Figure 1 (cartoon, helix red, strand yellow):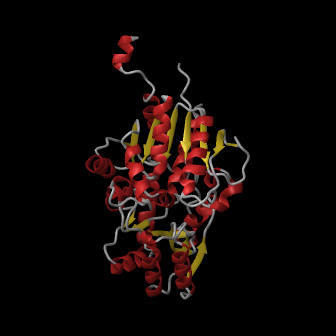
Figure 2 (tube, rainbow, N blue to C red):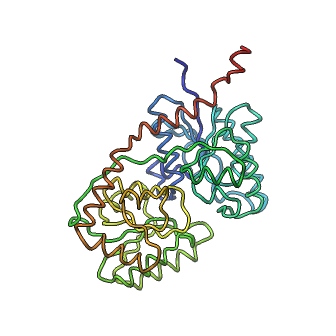
Figure 3 (cartoon, one colour):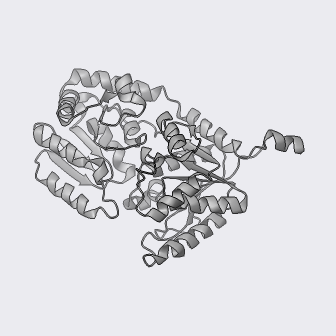
Length: 382
């Protein structure tokens, strides 16, 4: 049997999700998905490494069998000049030190082109995984600079494998970029505790990065109208959105039934899902949110405006409102009434329990290993 190829995950924000001692720096859903896949492949004997931001950790430090290589400090360099140095130069150096057969990155951005150029020059493979629906349309990219948007499109078209989360993303990539992709569903963490309705002391929970497209104001408006229920909000500031974070925190402070936690390390998020009766998502764009999977694995129904693959509606895993009025009614029903909550919670648990995560990791492993298998023409030539 051939040894598995080596893979390096390019995720500058991954370290806080991988190493508990750096959790204070914060990580999002794309980072968690890379960590879950990296752990799964490492369990299967793959040589796994990561390129991460420099937070002062030791070079080539390893966690759970995953070796890390430092790129650059998040605040390093002089504006305008730092795009080339130290960001591009140090990223290229980290790619070289990793010496991987496959490089794997997520989220739209300039790093996709940088990794593509390196992979082409060195004869290795590049995999890009869609992190959000916004990655699939040049008009909705969550990328600040025109330069980086163009570099993303350049790199995306040169990736050896593109992975989508849903058929809708697959269709959008083909339509908007002319790029083919393979759909593999997201991974999820092992289920935690699943307390009964009466043991849960948070009526409605909101979790996400605090930026305008997540529309946290809708959650706070619902809290103001449903003052008899306890609402909890978790989320840290995004770079460039510090004033928005402050506005949300100030608004939350005016509502006596809202507890604003701010940033909470990934390693502690699970306990809040276990305490919550419902998870509320008010975002206007998503991929397949990790928070949904984290909630369902703990028997917590989801109330959300975004319903990927119509799972919430078709499987009864919560409620999909279409207006602020329907949002209020959904929260009042599932967070305030035991019988409908118990039914939705049971369906959520069954949905997660029926999914074999190791099978999903196997699908990733097969797709990745297939990149290095010789084609039929190459085998005949050999």
